[in-house]
Image (tube, rainbow, N blue to C red; front, top):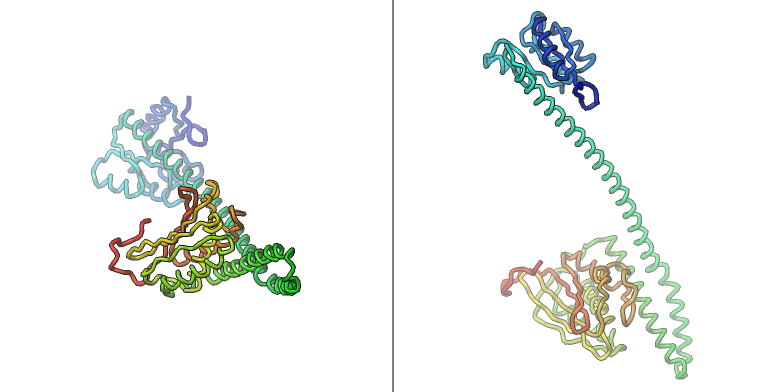
Amino acid sequence: MPLKNKNEHPIEIMAVDDTPENLQLLVDMLGKKGFHVRPVISGRAALTAAIRRPPDLILLDMRMPEMDGLEVCTKLKEREITRDIPIIFISAHGATADKVKAFQAGGVDYINKPFQLDEVLARINTHLKIQRLQTDLANQNGRLETMVENRTQQLEAANQKLAMLDQTKSDFLNLISHELRTPLHGVFGATDLTFAKLHAKVEFQELRELYETSRHRLLGLLENSLLLTTLQAKGGDFVNNVSQLDDILKTVRDEATDLVRSVNIEIAPVPLGLGKVMGDWFYLKKALLSLIEAVSKYSKPKSQIKIHANCFQDRVCLTFEGSGHTIPENQINQFFDLLAIPSAPTGDLGLSPAVAQRIIALLGGQVRVANKSPKGIEVQAWLPRFPVLKEYGQTSAPA
């Protein structure tokens, strides 16, 4: 059965020699082994025939009249259609200089005359195998390049879609924060005037409390929406500011106490002597207050939110602990995502976790949340310190 090449055609070997007896010997020997042999009597004829129909391999006599094997090989390597054909030189001259010239011209191997059938077959099979592997590798590289190109196009399309969705989200938040604020103030003003006339009527007290709670939540949502829009548009242009953490925590505790007083939750005293951290005072206060507000939603009445601090040379870790409720395990990883958790046990989280995470991330810090036992949650905020302090024993925060 004839041997087949990659195109499922019989493997074709061109034998080039100006001695007819040598050509006949190669045709007989290789034909019996399943190869299709094309005998060519001169170098010029071999060049024309190879360009017209490239063979799988060429056995090329090195020394021939008019156009020798070196010139034929050189010209074949100059053409794209024939440059990858393996060329094995055959010569009665075995000098090192001749072999060097053969390899410099582009030959892949060199056989001395008189040749032995086993040696010729071994070298032919070796180079046909190498050629096949190189072709397979080139095809595989081509497929990989196509896959990479297709994947790149898919990623570009996905990025464009994400950018569009992100812009839509930003536009929506901007619409909420700007376009709704004016009409809502009118609604709030009219409602306040109505309740002012009914302040003495006990039956309206519960309704007024519901109104105040709803107004606070709605204004907080508007404020956080505007802040998220600002952070997305301007980025972290506040990150190079420096703030005194003690002052921020005192203010956060005071405002948080007012925030959770209605649900009968206390805020523990804050740790002091924490030094300076990176970030603008206003944004840091907003981030930490948002975290305490989130913790309060998982705290039961008459409980206390505790605040701990661990100081490192380059960071400060603040931990806010609440007790009473835990986060469902399937929601923990989405805790800081935008509106990923619709409600907490004692109220809506709103945008508070997302606001805190984005502010602290822009500072180069991190936020984490975890359930604790007995029932409760703890939220950690890792804040970059400024300047780096030497008095603390640890040199860095854990990764």
